[in-house]
Length: 617
Image (cartoon, rainbow, N blue to C red; front, top):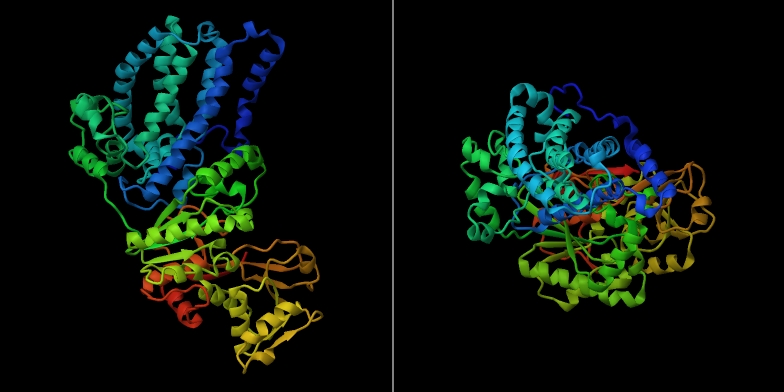
């Protein structure tokens, strides 16, 4: 919001929240009624095209959002190298409001003006007229309107809301108070209404003009340079007719320069062109190669989780993952993406974060949870992981941490497979088991003298049981075969504290992949502490469920604006944090396979670097 919000700051339908699209219902129902009651030859296609344009604009904008986030995570052509935080994502979550507003205007004009209905599919003279009206009145009026918005009175009440985003995303282009959008809509309607008044309007012409506005707006705010130099060499005057992302980026960092809409012509005329425009463009086009110090290797979980990735829906990714009813509508797209990634997929960069001088990236394997359980997929998945490790090693990455099922024992022996195959690896492979164990141990309430260990017997579960027995805490195992598997691993001095019993039910349970029936046999008030990266299913309301081993991240860890799977904001899994601490400390050993770091050493180092424990979900 602006520093001193003025009148008409809020959108009229703001209180409707996610149901704001109901304001379009009367217009859409009118179109449906027309289809139902008229013959095809009598249907107004220009009216139907408005709804199609709404869907197209949403898809078009989402493509730019995903492209921008992907490029800003990996591209060497990034322009502004600063952090983007949750506050900006929340502020820009209403980017589709302007699509609703513009649709209402189009529907209204279509209903009230006779020349705006039953438009032809295409008229070349109308497109020429729109081009001339845009290059003339629209660009000129926008320049002075934009300069006026930077006057203290209007800036503090309206335009400062837009400029709160220093690191821009494509949708930053449309993040303005309602009053500003009224002005912009008036300006951009000049070419369209001009063709309507002259009888030269067409469905494709108007759609192309709206697409042009969206394309240029998104490109100017994408924060990576994509306009090639050869275009300006082939046609030098183009620099006055088309701006670049670096051109508009300077407006968001310098504020008082580069006011033009899409054509820098008026900035040259009125001497408001930033002097560093050409230098920044050349520097951004050339780019700068960047090698991360740390790579975290993860993968999507459920099919719907692709929308939760940072590259997916920004507002969804900024909240902990959960199954949303409206995601069911996207099920065909999710399935298609899964099939395509299965056939053509390769490891891709998800995000880029920083801590002090440490540069980190998250890479994702294009495989889902269910695929990790398929025996015949293991070789392909291991190939993906192996290629990622070899690439990281070749690029000089110091640490690679294995997230989620990429470290599954049955898949690659918690990463030991790669150490055996590449004994001279310079990159350190970390499975994070020591820190995850430390988090579980520190989640157990003080004074506890008995815990129940049940579920899958993972590396973390085993290490937790051994550590608890060494502290003199009795560990009860209800499954006999797992008890006999763990018993030989216990030090002689502590094996008396590990017992088998199917009847004893203490109040503290350490769980990993339990069935619903097993949760139901727990006594009322039981504490369920997961030792897995995946959260337990909450089948009991009279018990307490802790979150998966995770920690709050320090404020100095920047560019974090999406949630890691189901974890809250600014919380990371212990397995991921372990890789960060490993890199910060410069430890030179692998932590994978049968290797584990000293639990107390890892815990104290983690706390020293500003990470804090989190327990309850």
